Length: 123
Image (cartoon, rainbow, N blue to C red; front, side, top):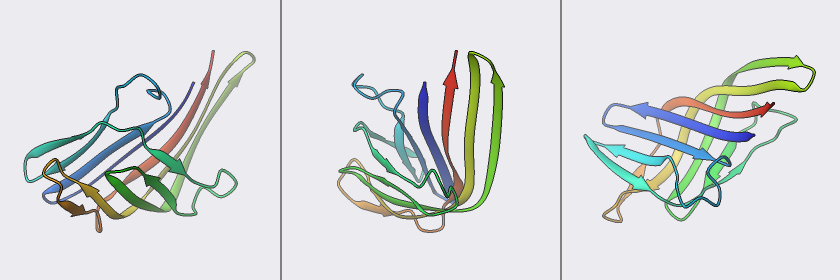
């Protein structure tokens, strides 16, 4: 199983983004939070990042999301036990770009601090 997950926040704004493990199900965990109101982002998102260099900027895009995540730190977790294994690259950094609220207004993501990860699980 493989998934992407990201979240970031700043006063009055937050974003929650995910991908891969819900692909094709019609369900997502994507949302924008602005001034106490949750705006559901129902579309699957495209994730672009360099698995050879986790600290390069990540792009997360869709019709309602145009985000760039710039990491400043990477945390690696790895466990290999024969047929069972786990590897997670969780990066911490800053978001820029924008996401669209339910009313169609674009909300700036600049200044959100958070994380983005890729997790791979085998069992």
